[in-house]
Length: 464
Image (cartoon, rainbow, N blue to C red; front, side, top):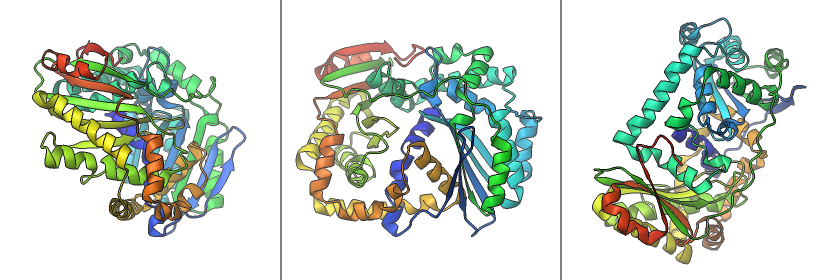
């Protein structure tokens, strides 16, 4: 689902930062150029293999979706790949395949992301295709109809077969309410159905333009020549006609409240417990990464050990952190048999309370530190991975020191400094939004113990 890919993008800063310098790796030198129209170019030469990776970010994303038209940025991102410039959908895909390249576009919470991998000899074609899909997409009405129907059907399929996929959409909509971070990236059945060809073209003019664009390129090229190519291709692109959305920080949840999504006959309950956490620029990123690794970020985490290994209540439990430009959600999620819904939720709350009260012991800190050191350096191996990292740093206004100084911060983190971060990040068990998908007839009375219950049917074509 696009929402989950978006979630992965929203977390990429944390994941990459967690290991780069821990293994003695620093980001390579790069050149930054800002064109007259506001487009930012980031150029990173990497001559070890004859490849070029590109990551382009159009700032905006789901936070810029018009009211009642959720999923607009996501549909636009998909449609951009189905014909641009002088190529229809088949010719566009064929041009990529003919040279063995890769090119994809997806929407996230705060951006539309273009990712490309090509041989260095095909750099001109890569730039042409990216420039076409951004500046001259065909946005064909018949393709829109197909993609919109597909997106709606994917949501319906998830409701029928794996509703746990939809927990982030329900959860963020409930936690954030009318705040832009409550917009499901992929939209809902009802909002997608409202998106017409005319409205999508209007959205493209209003929310996509050169003043929103970041282009990061890494690989086997000459910086002077690549800069000239990119300037020629993008310097004349017009600006978006509407201002870039600037979300403010949402208020943290105080007290408890429950959203129950009724799925009659469900044999399992899926639950999501969350509150507002921290943003991408959170200073204690080493402590944050260590804490989340121990709490719910790996198989041997506290949550998974207690809920799966010891209690046998689930096949998996985890904690996730969303860190966009303003504080995102900090979440515990899992699933269990309908009859053990309350037992599983109570155990998750108990483990959360233990994390806040007792912190993390030094041996667990050392284990998590070693885990991070071994897991994350490969995320910066390829040209496109490097390009994506520089683009993300630019998008969130972060200096390369965010990566290069991370190893020292990771090594310096102690149980005491992590405990302080835990108190700032992880909510008290009495301050949470609860989202539960399950058979309401069987669990309604029991889960009312957690707070006032709002109920909706899973058949409703919306997430809030």
